Length: 131
Image (cartoon, rainbow, N blue to C red; front, side):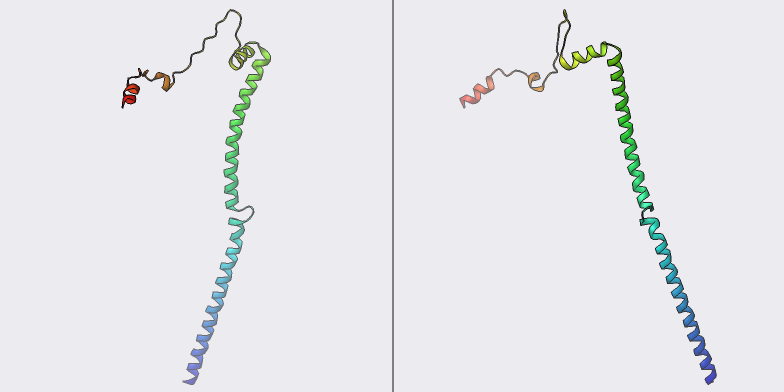
C-alpha cells in the first residue's frame, strides 16, 4: 500500500508540474502575442496612425479641390484681362464706380427696416410728454 501512495503522489506531482509548465507556456505565448500586436496597433506604422493619416489626407484633398476651383476662376479672370477690354471696363465700373461719357449712374439701395417702418406723426411723443 505504501508503494501505491508513492506512485499516486508521483503522479500528482508530475501532473502538477505538467500543468505548471503548460501555464508558463500559455502565459509566455500570451505575452509574446501582446508584444507582437503592440507595433501593429500603436507603433509608427500602426493602424491608428494610418487611420489618422487617411483623415488628414481627405481634409487636404478637400482643401486642394477648393483651391483648384479658385485657381481656375483666377485663371479665367487673367485670360479675360489679357484678351479684351470688356473685363477691364466691367471691373472699373464695379470696383471704382467709373462711368462713360453720356451715361447716368443710378444706384438703388435696399430698403432698411428703419426706413420701411411707418413714419411717426408725433402724437405718441406729445401724449407721453403731457403725462
